Length: 154
Image (tube, rainbow, N blue to C red; front, side, top):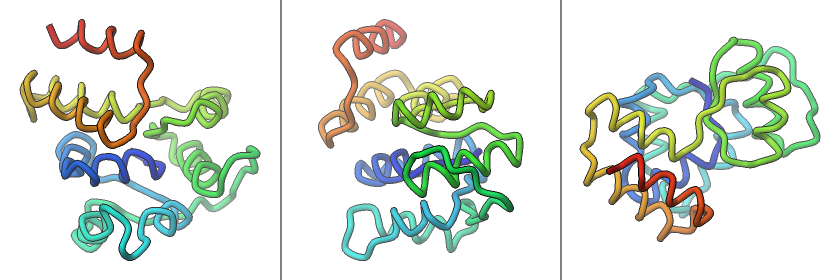
């Protein structure tokens, strides 16, 4: 599974980066995403750095980049997903549209939580707690989407 920066940053902020390891390992990121998430002093720096050193987050660049008019990390991550014929963890609406145009399977950060629940990595209470912590840390979910997610947890 390829990942853009958002899931790494958000999950590391709430000490839940291990959900990625337990549900999708290995995670592959391009060097531009690595540069975005590995900023010394930034929240999550050490956990992401340790994951890369531990080898379950691998840094691989696409052989050929496609300029989709997005940020460097999104361009490289989508290019890598296309090249490797793999899914991608993305949350940005424009990046999702671009990836879908290339038939790249999309997973959002919230989907990671529900995949962990389905795989019995966490239980419903932990899924709800994780979702709410994401929101508390600034992850945006519309009221309608939040209600839909809550109904899945019942």
